[in-house]
Structure formats: C-alpha cells, structure tokens
Figure 1 (cartoon, rainbow over the protein chains, first blue to last red):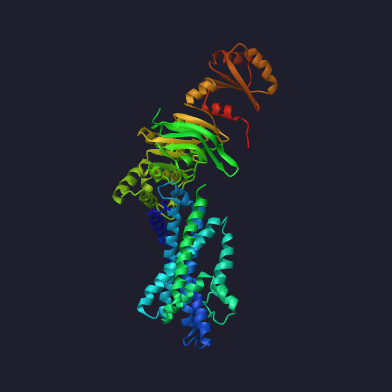
Figure 2 (figure 1 turned 180 degrees about the vertical axis):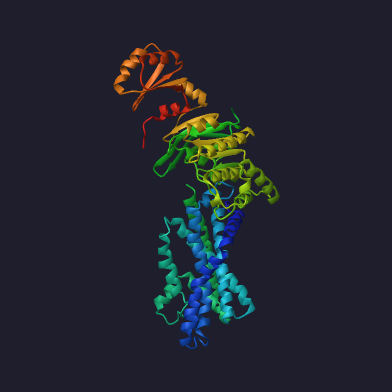
Length: 256
Length: 306
C-alpha cells in the first residue's frame, strides 16, 4: 500500500479536464433513469396509492432513489468509464510509465467515480426538493451527503473489481443485469421489506443497497434507530475491503 | 566501463508459458544511443518495458541509474522519458493541455511547464498547433507531440520504442534529426526498431535480438565488418548456376549465400570478385556496400519466419 500516493488526485484532475466538454450530456444521462422513476412511480403511480406510511408515495420513494442514483453513477463510471480509459484510450499505459503508480491510477479512478456519484445524488436531492420532499432536519443534509459518498465509494470499488476481470463490455451485463438491477428492485427502494417472507428479508440484508436505503429513509423521516450505525459500518467496511481488492486485482491486470 | 547506466544480467521475462526474453545480458554506457533490433516478437519491447519499469523482471538482474528496475520504482520513472510504440494522447484535450497535464504528472510547476512546453513545441515544430485538438493532427504530428511529451521532464534516459514505425519519409527524417539533437545534449537513448536504416542513423551500438535472445552486439560498422565484410554482390540467377559461378570465383576471399532467386556474395574487398562477375556477363547483378540489413538478415535468416 506504500505505492498509494497523493498522485491519485492527478487522475481525478485529468478526468475532470476531459469531462468538462461532456458535463451537460453526462448529467442528463445520470439524471435520466432515477428521475423517470421519480416521475412515473412517485407522481404517476403514487397518485393512486393514497397515503404510504402517512405520507404520499413520492416521499417514500425519494430516499431510495437518491442512494440508487449515487450507486448507479459511480458504478457505471468504474465499469464503462474506466474500461474505455484503460483499454480504448490506453490512458493507464501512459501513466504507468510515469511516477504515478498503478495503485494511484485505480484510487484516482475511484475518487473520480465517487465525485460522479455525488453529482448524481445531489442532482436527485435537488430535483426532489423541487417536488417538495426534504430531509427531516438540516443535519440530515450532511448525513445524506456522507451516505451518498459512502455508497459511491462502495459501489465504485466493487465495480472496479468487476472491471479488473472484464475481457470486454458485454461482461458488464452480468454485473448490471444480475446484480445492480435486482438490487435496485429488492433493496426496499420501491416498497417496504417488512411484509416480505422471512428468507427474502434475510437475503435482502446481504445487499449493500438495502442498508443504504434504510439509512436514507431514516434521514428523511428523522427517526434514527440505533441499528442504523451498524448498517453504516457495514457499508463502510465493505467499501474499504472492496477498495483494496480493487487495487490488488487492477494492479494484477495492469502490470504484466 | 564501470559506470554503465543500464546493466542487465541473465535477464528473463516470461508471460505464463511464453518466454519473451530469454536470459539476455547487456550494458549501456551513459550518453550513447543503444538499439535493440529485431523482427516482431523478438522481445525488444518487452526488454525496454523492463528498463522503464512498467513490466516486472521474471529473473536475472536489471539496474537502471544504479537502481534495481522494478515496477514501483518512481525514481527511475521520474528521470526517464518514454516514446511508446503507440501514441497515448488525450483526444478530448488540446496539444497544449496534453503537455500541461503531463508536466503536472512530474510535479513541474505551471510557470516552468509553460516555458518548457513553448520550447518543446517549437523543437518538434508544432508551435502553430498548440491549441488544436488531437484528432486534428496528422499521424506524424501526433508522433512529434509524443516526443515532446517524453521530453517534458528533461529526462536523463529516453526510451524510444519503434519511434518511426508507420510514418512517411519526411516525418521519419524530422524525428531522426530531433532524436539526434536530444542525444547530442548528452541524453542516453535506448531505441527499438525493425528498420536497419533507423539503427544506422541513430545508434552507436546495437544488439540484434531474435526469439528472446541477443544474437550479436556491437557497433554497426563492427558487426558489418565481422559478419559480412565491406561489399555485397547480389546476383539474381537460377540456383543451378550457383556452382559454376562459385567455382570460377574460387581463390578469392568471399562468402556466399543463396536466398530465393538470388545468390549473395559477401566480400571484404570486392574488387577482384566483381571484376570476375562482370566478365561472366550475368544479366542482373547489384554491387553495393554492406549494410546492417545484411547483418540482420544473415543472423535472423532471410526467409520469412512466422
């Protein structure tokens, strides 16, 4: 790990420079999907659902969609974004011949993906505020920011591990279709998990997004159960483990 | 020389079952241009990748600037400039931005970077393109920009991996001139190439590589004199004619080789031989000075091996 240095920030800067021209399209894309869910299900479907735990369905949906948005943006950045830079643009080969180490490159990519996740999450926060849904307290804004950063860190690191094994783009479909998408549906974003069968509930606890959604929901309701700190520590711990695994597997792929 | 800048001893590189570099030893003095020549797949690029620390050594030892070459050696990388086989340029950025960003990698302060970039762009004759995007550049321009990039950290060692492959003659000559002028300033250079002309233009010493091994090492004139002689006489003639020709030439100092439709005669002093060949009145005879290409083909075989 002594190969990890502040040079990682160079990669963030480099991505920032080349991103500048694409700010508008990428924001539109990363805003797209969760926003459509918000409108279609929150406003559209929600209009027929009456009160959902005492509040409109939109209020139930927002906390989950905010974390999902951070999750998807950071994941895609470390899947497709990193893959393009590594294989098609040969960017990593270029920097490996400089004092920037493989670890710096991968860490820089993950930091960059966290930034992208935060942008998407904050955009969703902003849009939901326009629709009248806010965190329960001012302190909640800080908490939701920390949560989005943690979720982005976890999923960018996890996606980076997938990328380290990916022979081509198609490989990512397994991960997105068989892991990210089901998680989106079953982590409690769209409906409470309480009434689901026991084993189903148990299985959902293995999905990182479930914990993130539970915390997010608490930030919006203002009701904090003590168990939430455990959920947060799980996210953080899984994130840290995935981060170092990502460094290891990517280095193995980059240095031959 | 005891102060070799690069020293390799029984250097081996394996990728799984494939041995790319098979126990080579060499030493490169400071200030010279050393060339690795060889066909595709000979192990040239793998060797230089180990020298500039992007590929780990499997076994044997390799030191650069007296330091062990390994992937995590930032010290070696910070004073080495690399011209890779492929241009790594950021297509989304301008020429100027590409260099500015790269200067940042080496921790060069912005004011100093701007100064160096202006100098380098004029050095590679791209000063008018400073604000162009990369995809507006020709292949030759991209290559020149890659050379400017490799020089941004004022390296003490330059690695040039096939610097002119795929370029037109004008672009190639411009790059040769620039590399020679960098060398004149005392920078050590390690070059890989499959063009013998390039090696003769640039290299003080060459190592001819084939299938992961160094077949022969020396200065180009030494190698030519040792293995070929001074002159080559190429006779395009059916193989049945070889025997009578060789018989008529007996008594002269020469070697011969039959390849495809041609008979090659290698001579130290070709005057007597060429006189006799002329007397034979053969239809297609070429008499020329021996070149590194003859050495290369003699060592690695003139026939296509794949």
